Image (cartoon, rainbow, N blue to C red; front, side, top):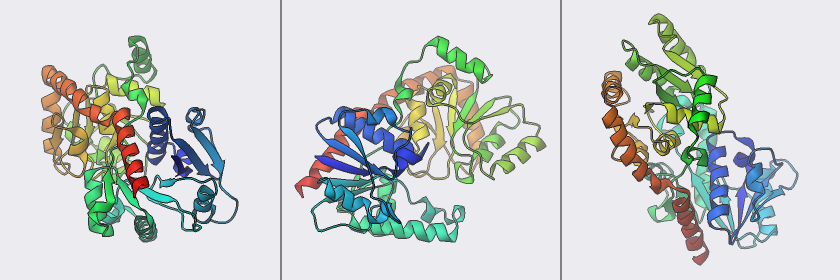
Length: 367
């Protein structure tokens, strides 16, 4: 099969949708080498350059013009005789020729409909129109979790039989065994505490960092936070200042993937009390790193965390505090959960994801 992809996120996004796009192409290129994978975009970038070196992965520049991604990319894919066009971020091109081509779109989440307060009116309207249009055009839809599948049925009114769930994985750096020397060098570089709990993700209201700092107030447990700051960060700063917690919480940005993987391994506990996620890749990253997880008992997070993560009510910081103290003070329980969770998280291995994606593509071609 020749499969064309909308490469915008692959080339332009550093995290989130960019990581999903690059991982998906890397995994397919490695585990399903018989297919040909073609990335379309207005231009290539340094992101994913190693993936583009794979023999079965190539780049094609989208035809020039206004709204080229929407109006030209689909026709360009048909012109090179692609069998399938895969939109990786909830969108498909608007214009096509009569030439046969199967269409598939990945929808990650519909958070803008569940939590409209986090989005502007204009963004909500644009997102809804794009997702609804893509869902109507697509021959099949990939949802990245059962939660997202349910949301697509509920909010976009898509028939259940049109949706397939294919989970995400995570970057291979989290599955590698770094040397003790490298781990120590990262610990020294960032001046990390001897023991600490970790939180990773954009510092925004939905990720709920404020309730983590509420939870560690009155304890001496160090917290390391890695993520891009938004205006919500001011709320965190205000609470830390008021409660004299500035020295207990350390913020890091612009950490490389290998360094991030090392910090996960150095952490004693990973805490992720998000109010809602489409999938929650940081949970998977932590489990592959053999770091026990405390996460929310809502949305898709139990799907990602499995039976041996610890679940909390994200709205109740006293519950978060109790669960943190429970694991912090019990090394054998941390080890037990980490060991069992490592077995569980293999369901999100590259090989499984590749097989599931290829099965969807084959099903699509047989229709």
